[in-house]
Image 1 (cartoon, helix red, strand yellow):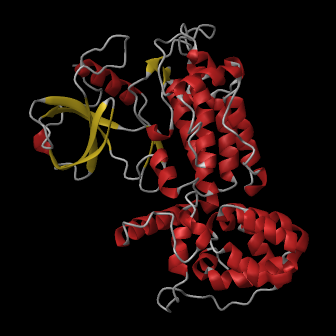
Image 2 (spheres, one colour; image 1 turned 180 degrees about the vertical axis):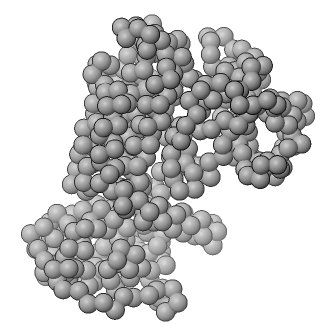
Length: 455
């Protein structure tokens, strides 16, 4: 088997300990293990017997692994999963025979798909913009090495403990000939996941080009921005029928005013999924947009990461304490019993507990009404994402919220939608006075949130 450029010997079972199963799929299985000599965790990918992704007929898994590892080694960088070597041994978890696999970097943050599922929605905007930028960086590097990914989707974008993104799963990678001849980007057999495939890929005679990855990136952006799976109820046959007709995931619920730079990112998303492959921007062109919009939120990234870690910790703790209660259910808040509510409502139960001096440190600094209003404006995106007790706050605002507006807010299904309506219908026309009043009420209901945001 072909070896990697920096690897002289395969990694054997004797070098690995503390094996854990972390995932499986049609390709095979992935394990986590600690390397005894290196002192850190690695991932080991083992393919099923006979699995191969490089031709129309199955090939031996040893060749498939060698080619995948070679592709990974060729594009190793900060935004692409690192490969350490090739595994050869008998896995302790159900292993009976000698197996071969790839030893890779272990990503403790899971995948983008898992993150969106755990959050029941999109991450905070700073993290959205960083994910968009890092995926574009990885894909640009991949294409610069004349390779396609060919299966770009949320489950193939892995995250470290700080939610930095790296591209993974090169089982469908192809050597791109487009760099040799710009008019002929033929690469090989079609593949990928149908929800992320471009319209031309549903043609029987299609041969993939790099525009395939650009389209997939557009759908991936939509998933990250909305926190949703594209076409969740559609059968594959319907998707195959409608995508070539021009159907795309809906964008009407994306409010461009929620975050600076969001409109530019959505415009890029739509360009990437253009019906005409030649009109889709290259990843180098995508980077011009993603770098610009991420720079607007770069200073907020640490707060966003902390917020997500807190949510995930609350999620885990909540499930551990009461495994019979659905994750999104909170008996103290009637609206949170709806199946579509997000993780924000898990914290309703916690925030209704009387805070102790040890758990909450309330700031004693005084702020003018203008400062309070500025605080609300500056933190608009985070407040929309994180304020859970919306109707209780609206009730305390009293006559500041018009009766028709109150009914409109109450009719909204999620806390995020209620907060958006409050910003648009009450804060915008009400100005400083209403925002200052909202700040005061917010501080009583969400003291930790206000303190974390510097209020």
